[in-house]
Length: 196
Image 1: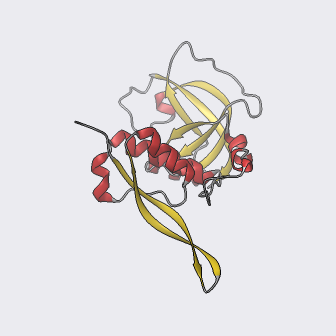
Image 2 (image 1 turned 135 degrees about the vertical axis):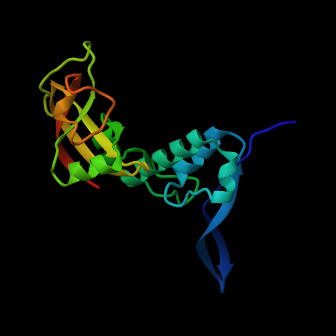
């Protein structure tokens, strides 16, 4: 019979009596699950201590590992802590930071491009031209994004201010692409709200 096996580690708590007093101790330990959904549940319960050792990565696809890293980074960004026991307080599910970022989509920047943004050299990103994309000035908080680096670490929270149609020539000194100078692109200007 074939079955799924996903191995991972996270913090455990044990309570025992010592010298007539109850002592609670945390330790890192091994766990596993037979469904990917179970792994995600464990990650959500233990975002601080959840980890997959290199020898156990063979049980996961590259896509699954990438997904788990992204989710873990997001949970840590919003300040979610490991549960202390199986009865997590309701306040854990009313996270103010999650509400702050709930309308943000996640966008990945190459590290070199991210350096230019962080240094203030550029305040825009771009995408391929599409005649169906609306070119506009955005209202405050209408279009926000969380920017991650190549490893999936959250680096910026940005608010887009406007978009324009430009020729590739406008950005070619910042980003190399297989485009001609007069090929159309959409440039999206933003302001940085937060750096992480």
